[in-house]
Structure formats: C-alpha cells, structure tokens
Length: 571
Image 1 (cartoon, one colour):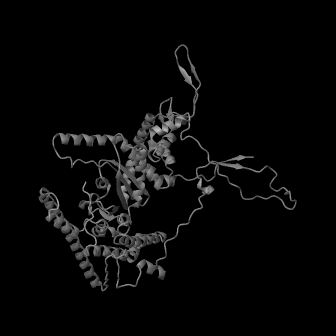
Image 2 (cartoon, helix red, strand yellow):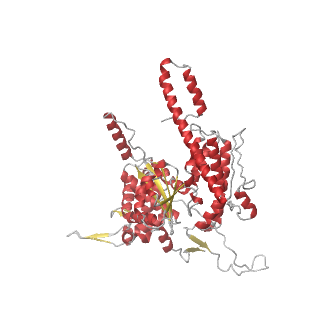
Image 3 (cartoon, helix red, strand yellow):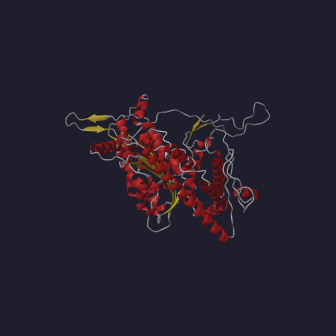
C-alpha cells in the first residue's frame, strides 16, 4: 500500500535539489532522482488539471451570472493565524441566506427536539396482558370515613409489571393410548391440531412462534446459535444449534416467495434508492480466494487481480406504499448489486433517484438513462471533519455550511413540503451556501494552499469533482441529502458478524440476507417482526400463492388492534 506523504510541490523541488548535492550514497542517485522526477511530473500534472478545472468552472459560472445580471464575487484569502478563509459576496449583505431568511420570517428555525423524561407511559406497552384489580363491592357510593361525602369513581392507578421468561417455552402434551394385544393396533387420544403447527417431528415440534423468535434473535439480535443453545440449556429447554440452523433454513424456503415479491415490488415501485457496502466474511469464499491466490503464485503469475472484497451490501428503497430494505452478502460491491436489481426495473417511466458515497465503483455510464445519481453530503462533511485537527479553519467553514443546509432540510420536513416545494426551497436557501463552499475549495486549489499530497486535498477535490452529484438535491425533486439511512441499516449485518464472526457457506449467507431483509423491512413499516414472521409462516401455503398479500404494509393494514382489550378482573 502506498503511503501518503504530506509534502508540497515546493518541498519536492527542494528534495530534488538536495538529491543533486549527492547527500546519499553514490549508487542511490540515479534511482532516487528518477523516482522523484517522475513523482514531481505526476503531481504537477495533477495540480495543473485541477487548477484548469476550477478556472473553467469559474469562467462558466461568471458567464452564466453575467447573462442573468447577478454577479457574485467570491474571494478566498490564505489562512493566517488559524482564521478561516474570507468569503465575500458582493451581491448580498453579511450573513448566509439561511440566516437572512430566518429574520424575515420566510424560513423558521427547525423544530427543537423535546427531551423525554426517560420513562415510558403505560400506552407504550402495547403487547401486554391487562389485569384489573376491582374495588370490593359496596365501596363506591359508600360514606367516607370523614363522614362528609360519599366515595365516587376516580381515575385508575396503573402499575407496569415486567416479567422475565425464557425466549422459548416448552409444553409436554401427553396422549393416552390403547393397543390391541392381537393385531397391535394403537388408538391415541385426540388433541388440539395446533400442537403440530410448526417444524419438526411427531416427537418434537418447533412452533412457528419459536421459529420466528429464533430468526429475530439470531439475525437481528446477533445472538449465535451456540449461545442460544447454552442459554436455554440453563432454563431446562435444550435447543441444539444444529436444530436451530435446520429451522431457520427451512423457514427461508417457506418465506422465499415473500422475499422475491418484496425485492421485485421494491425495485419496480421505488422512488429513491440508497445503497452502500460494509465488510463481511464467508469462510467458503475466503478459502476460494486463498486457493486461487496460491495457484497463481505457483504459476509465477501476478495476484493483484484476484478479487478479495467480501461485502454486505445494504439497499434502502422508498416506495409509495412503504419502505423496502434488502441485504446481499458475497464477493461483490454495491455497483454490481445495483446492476442485478435494475433488471426488475421497467424500461419506461420516471428515473430512479439513487444516492450513495462517491466511490467510482458505484457509478456506471450505462445507468445514465435509468438513474438520477446523487452523492451523500454527509460523506463530504466527514472528509472535512477528518482533517479538522490540521485544517480547523476550512473545517469550520464546511461545518457551518452543512449545518445550515441540514437545518433547511429539517424545515422542509417540518412543513411537509412536496418534492417540488422542497426543491425550490433548497434552490433558494441551500444552493448559495453550497456554492460558497465550492468557491472556497476552488480558491484553495488555485492559491496552492491545497496540493495533491496534503491532507486537505481529498475533501477539497471531493467537493469539486462530485459537485453536480452533491447538489443534485437542488436541481432534481426528491433527491435525498445523504445516504445515512442505508448506513444505519448496515448495523444489522455488522452486529451479526460481531457475534458470529462469519458465515460458513454462501448458502448460509443467503439465508441470513433473506431473513435480515424481511426483519428490517417489517421494522421500517412499524410491523413487529416476530409477530409478522409468525403470521407469514402460519399461512405459508397461502403466502406461496399470493405473496403480495403478505408484504409488510399490507399486513399492517389488515391487522387491526382489538376493539376490546381482554382483561382479567381480580377482586
């Protein structure tokens, strides 16, 4: 891996001059001189290209501004004594557009979050048994001890009692039997048919509710099978890890139609898509990579082209009906997963809005007619955050810009703006802020305060190179500011690997991806995942025929809370 050297071009010139003075061993000079000369030419070319790009864009912007009659003069001065670069806008008064808008009443401050007191109310416990403790007969209407008034009904006192219990409960069903001594015929007592609902044999049956709990605890809670086995062994409920795997594997087969329906509907109906990768581990794939690398080494071939990146890709889809979340684990990256998913997309219709990080592997010219592609602004801000120790002034400017831009986004959400209203709002209040940030970055390049080997080069050139994608939320309706939502859902596979460390096979990874997708999609649509999976598994025969009837938002619409709460009365 090449190490980044924080050195200016002038510093390289001085180094090259010292090499000419032969301060090293005599045999080193031809080699070192050639290397530094090559590096110097490359870095100067990179610097020249970036300066030319900044100048060309500035000329184009000035031409466009002159045509509209609105000329903006932005000047950046070098950093002195830790002070930020000076940004001067000749077309407006001091202060940002957001600040001015806040004073004239057109852009109110974003709503402040109300701090909770840390205690949930009784209504938060939705899945609870209700027990009513009634007063003794004759208390209501009786004369009080004070002798001045009668006792009348008063608001009830509610106490929340939280009980501990195993994740799985066990029932022993004893069937009395009779057997003929002559022919051996056995007659068994009948029992509830629900006893055999689930997976297993006539001796041990894992109810659908137990399967659903197991799936959620393992693939969402991150509890390994062996840990669940040890935990329940202490409760006297043996559940071998091999049996647990068999259960989740068979459940995946039964839920396969639902997963495919979720994937197809999500891509066909999606309005926006966020996608990103995180590292993963599949033992069978890793063995394959090592075997391929070893074979190439024996042949004396290069191993640089061997793919080694095992990723878990998360896809966050927003549709008119609800949210769809999908996971894919394997030897791929997000761009390749997108290629597969776009096959479900119809060739006609509006373009799909996609937001991801700025990695080149996530973009393809083949998608130009299918996608409106944006880049995550949170990633842009974090690049400045990473260098705030060395460049606090530039970080302060970027931080202030993005604070106001994200505050504007909060205002648009609070006002429940339509995509078109949000676009006009950001174009008016956020685009000028972004343009000032870009102007600062261009000035840092042209003044050579940011050079290719400096730590400031990455955040500055990210803004310049990704400008059209970073500001897509100001030019196209419905484009998200960032990809934070997909970053948040990736905690599910990360948490799984933190507990289980790896998948053993690609089949195991595929089963995990399917279950994680169904759980995450259920939670995103406010469906309790254990109850949702339990419902789908109990109706797997019908689910196979019409899987669209079991999509999370359809399930939520169909399931209604009971009108009358079942209560136990204790006197």
